[in-house]
Image (cartoon, rainbow, N blue to C red; front, side, top):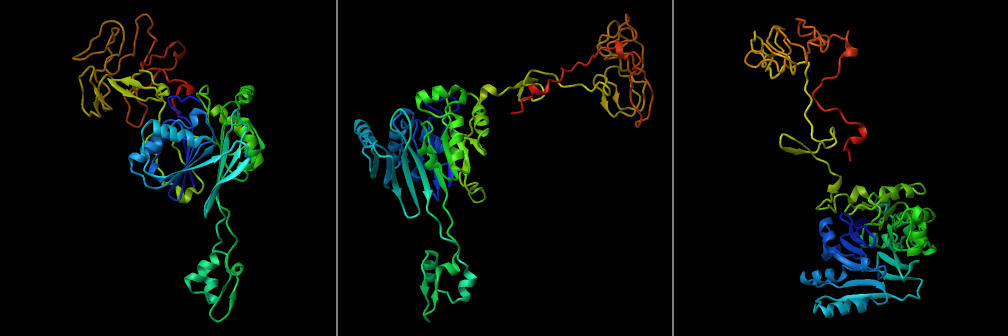
Length: 464
């Protein structure tokens, strides 16, 4: 089974959250739990075919949980669906659907099977097939609301084919009978018992959908030993009074249900729009139950990742553009982590460059600004960079030099008023030695004159 959240908002959608809907994929069939506005579009974006829908389960009649139902049925009609579909929900679902279809003059060409649950019923099996069934239980909300449990029936154990052949079982019909849990008799009259060849039955996977409810025993019963529990976490525990007032759960309540039910994985959703960062709710739930995951729209959740991964692939990805920062340099827009998204100039490696130097020039150079880079001659005319005063520069001399006649590399931002500032010792060295060392004797009086922007603190990095 694969669970795909399609909408994780509560009551009102946001720019990044859609109204409640969760799709369950199982062996090529799709089961939809609630059908909020835009649910059919989210199915397309999730890579789920609407034509594969077998059943739609509506929890209750708050508008955000069923507002996309009529549009979906209309689309299925336009696609010329001819296969029956089952709609499950509280009493009144059929009246609502038929009235809207008649009002819109939509003639459905496929059968709709309505399965309604009376508000006096505490629990009921609403779907019962050969290999799975669905149970509905009443939850605790301001109006009648149903939670659902999708349960695969136990799978037969594996047949020990080698042992079966040794005992004389060769017919395919006999293997099927053994796998179905039946004893068989061979042509020679030998009785083969199922338990001797077939292993123990394997429990089927299960999924519980619990939303719009306060904590209640039926929520725990629905979630008992499930592989995946999808539970609402509309509020944080600091607003527990608000949760009780509106008939909803906090993240703590969801963790309590998961703990008592001993579910394998808790997935929380149905977030209030007041929480722009749902990790607050995630951390709160994880304090009491782990593992807990956030329901991320269109992100599949697998019960068997080794075999199910890649079956459903989202077609789109939502990005919060309000949190995306971009920097600009040279007319280009870029996502720059080092600068926190601000405009910046790249760092200069001033220890090896003098203006714009030729790369690894090996001869003498009389060029002032564009001297050879890594040349073996130290007497190139590289004048000071941004020094103050007059300059004896050649074609491209030092920029703002301060009367420096140094033939190699002149002082960096030298100043006649402070001869020790930026003092440089020019040393003719081999390539293996230190190149253009700085005199640290007056380091305390020397300011940092690097022209590049300062490196931002770690917290400014746009890492997420």
